Image (tube, rainbow over all chains, first blue to last red; front, side):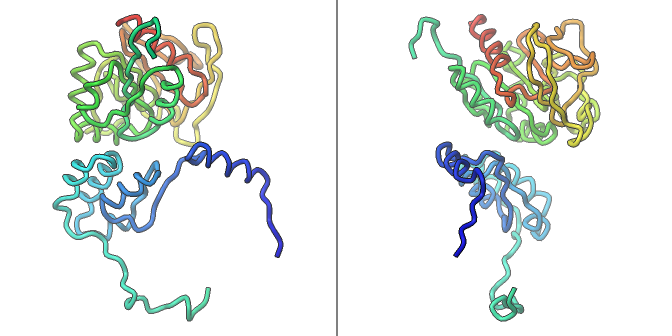
Length: 109
Length: 198
């Protein structure tokens, strides 16, 4: 087995470990469908949240977009999160296992 | 703590959106107590406010929905010192050009500011400025441009003949991001003014 080394990586890992944060802005995305999802990403250390289908595939995209923005700003304020999460209609739903008709296990990459 | 100079200033950094983290680091480094401000309750506990860069129309909306717009407006009228950088300068201006029709600004300094006045994101640039006879590295990111200054506004630095750092009373504004150049002098100056007032 060969080992690939990247110049400076060692130093970078040390820097991240010391400071507890990345040297670049951390944007997060993927599957964010509710204000609570956005707040969770921020609580875990993100600096920004991108949301696409989570807004457009929901029942009520306008109010949901506004609520997700508020939740991203006020991610540590439970009372604001509770307030903005109300009355938004149904969120984007996930795809159930039985609806997935193409399995990577069978198809391969 | 408990030095001979007296109380340590508590400086709020508006943290609704944008580049607030680097301001907090710099103020803390300079010995001030920096507090993130996202609600009117948090604003009540600070002596001064830094309004950071970011996206001014987004911040305008969040200022209104959080109740902070009116709270900050009241504090500014009562003389609270403020330092607005980039989008923060837009939010403190009397007049915003190329803004959204529903965008609000606090009219705390008599200037007209054009959003994206130096061009789009790709036109962002860095340059050496002259601040009080000393060089200061200016980082201009999709920067707003000062287009009109009222008679009471003092110009502290220019770039190509256009003011980029200005002050009126307790309010200082910059087109650029002084928190990103690693040079604490402008923040130190802001704190000095604060200590002189108290």
